Image 1 (cartoon, rainbow, N blue to C red):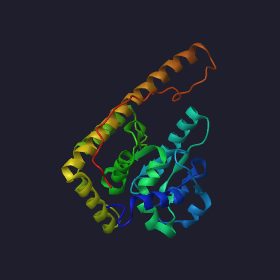
Image 2: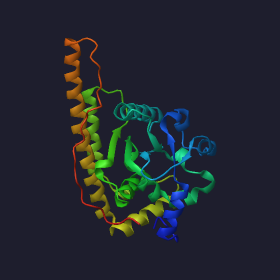
Image 3: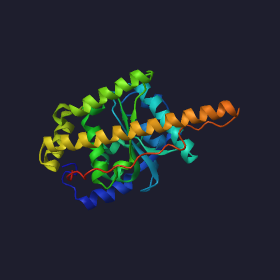
Image 4: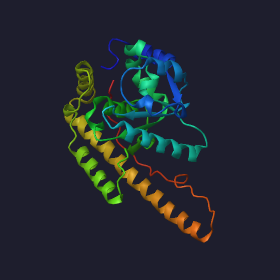
Length: 269
């Protein structure tokens, strides 16, 4: 349904032509402050990209708090640099969608997701209520991506550990209650298209909802294990620093992401 009357071969060819990315250090907080179209950003920041050379597709909700989102993006960027020693190259909608060819670009979304090595979910309070966000997760998986290459990042709340745990429990409740019919889009025409895609690709909403809950549940488990690894590493390095002043602190360079598997969802497209 997402492809409309285009053939898969035509969309693949067109998507490869349109595929682009941005170096994350070129992006500023002002650039993501709102969802208003800004063709100048595309012209200034986007660069042609090749498959497997884009580190991550950044998935987010424009209805989430912009400042919290920016802090989360900056933290993710710092962690990436600590591990890889370079700036991440990413696909970010406001910079990488040409507003003068928006219909072409949206039809090629599956190609753009397939061309990125990872999918990073910047999840705030409204993420699970936005259909485009939800569809991006399953397109990534359907186009050959692995759940092991999906990363869940919760937006900053300046909370202590107890409040963060409460926030994770709240997220788990939202996941358990998720229903695609309750999610929406800014444009009703987009909502109709995406809901039709779900119904056709999964044989109905109950199957889609169950598959989404399973994927997100596993991602929450992975995040919890990763955060525990980071905290343990921080404690270890803190104790070493006390014994040996000047010991370098790298909290994230050795974090291990547990390997998980998930049943492949039914075709979306």
